[in-house]
Image 1 (cartoon, rainbow, N blue to C red):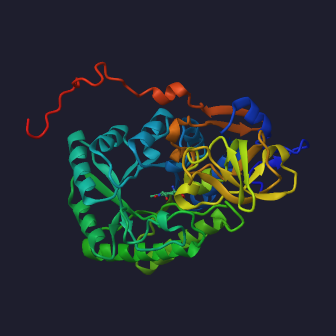
Image 2 (spheres, rainbow, N blue to C red):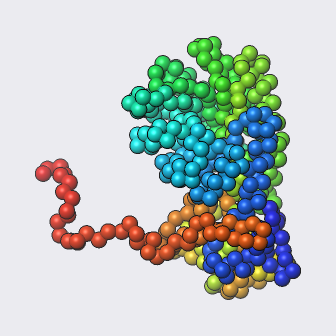
Image 3 (cartoon, rainbow, N blue to C red):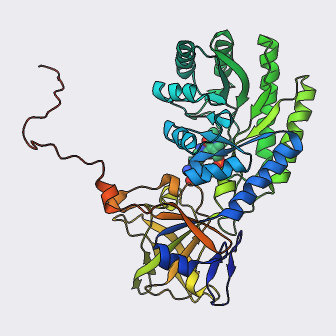
Length: 448
Ligand SMILES: Cc1ncc(COP(=O)(O)O)c(C=O)c1O
Ligand SMILES: N[C@@H](CCCC[NH3+])C(=O)O
């Protein structure tokens, strides 16, 4: 397994993160446990800030969907990044964390009126409009609120990034954004320009996630700037800012070869400059929305090994105390992860085993076929690169409480998300007083 961030193996042969012995973390806080490496998380933010903001005056929006808690919001704010939120819940979290609202960009393909009202009330920096229905609704709501909302439009450039089929969002057949090729994008721009209560500042696209082909971004820039030139010819308007979404791939296994952020920034910003000049456009400010490449590598999940079931000649199942509830990615996308036994981190692998979760679901497997020192009940399994799309996609299937999250740094750990309790699980359950009799809230139905 590749040691990332502040990971090292200490003289007890235990895995250490942020100067904390992970075996002690497991003892102290219980498992499953999400561990976030503060130094590494901040370093990843800084790499983006330097590469885009310091060097090119670009804006980096951290994609909240990958991992958002109040403490994470604070760190992102302190590192000078902006924030991409996609729901009222993410927006509310940012507000509660006192994230500067002018640095918040509100995405989503089906924002509700209530969500848009909240965004207007909080005075977010930009609303990223996805479709004509939203555009009309926002114009009306902004008018009612007596404000002119700054918006960017989400377009579908038809660029396919080389990544897993389910997480491609840039191709034409997508629920996100308006298609350039068939004229829908031009149409929504004209609509936006004709409205009084919105001010169109720029265009957005996002071509997918876990991308290693930097060329895909250059291709997206080509399509977007080419289209911007067409828009200017038809309407006279041109974008002052362009957002190219997120998507930079990270290391999960040896099959993944992440690109340096500086190379990505240089390539993208240069492409935008060259293309803008070639099309005689003003050079737009470049925005990007990385999520996974900031939070992903900085997260690790610790589990305790329980039942070990050997089926001779077939496979050895090693069950841990978490699974698809805290990390649904292997079940959803067949994602691969690396892991090691944190309490025997220096030992050589002895056999190939498969790591099972504890949900009542055959598909609840965390890792198929991984080489480890022979696991035994009580061992601590550490799975790497779980910072993105793990806690944020976690669930309570089988009424398993969600794990706690600790932030580690310089040999100290703080809880940033408390472990859910059984009481948390039943908090919203209500047993009507007269169960089995007539309901209290009468709702008229057909035929009555
Ligand atoms: C619009 C948008 N922006 C940003 C992101 C973040 O992408 P990633 O986590 O791959 O950097 C996503 C998710 O893919 C997205 O849909
Ligand atoms: N949730 C996906 C990525 C989704 C991209 C969101 N636009 C993953 O875990 O890889």
